[in-house]
Image (tube, rainbow, N blue to C red; front, side, top):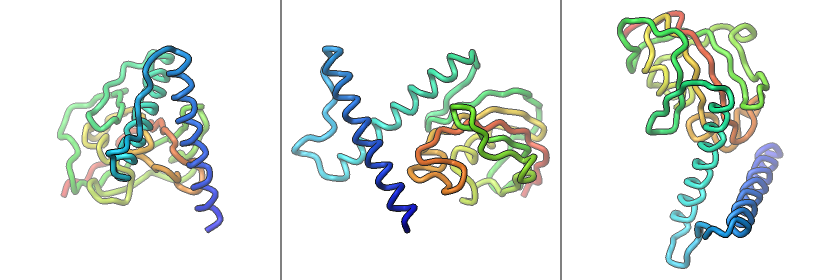
Length: 185
């Protein structure tokens, strides 16, 4: 319970900091700043605006990260960034397929979170909620034997609280993987 309160305090602090930064940035740049809260909005609309703002900021961070490394990545409509490292031919992975992957998960700052060298191959059924949405979406772009890199924003990863172990709150993840086995349904 203490961890959850701590996460909520950290999230609130980060959110307020981001809003202060945004107002300060737009004020000093001479641009009109976006209004996140209007009198006519309901609380749900206010949250939607905050979420959109956070997603935009995450996207800017990812784009800058990708450009600094010179990676040739594509972006899906949901916000998942991906790059094929080794692109095999064959049948794409589908919902219900059981997959085994060799993987490494890092934060944008390079911090290693998890690797199959320490935890073993990751095994899951595509379409089940046992793994994050970004990995579920990205794996369907691959075939058996493919190697790829995904950059998974928080809204497709571990979200507001992280995994409460090695992945912090609102973390952007760099997921490098190789599909080792696909068992079709």
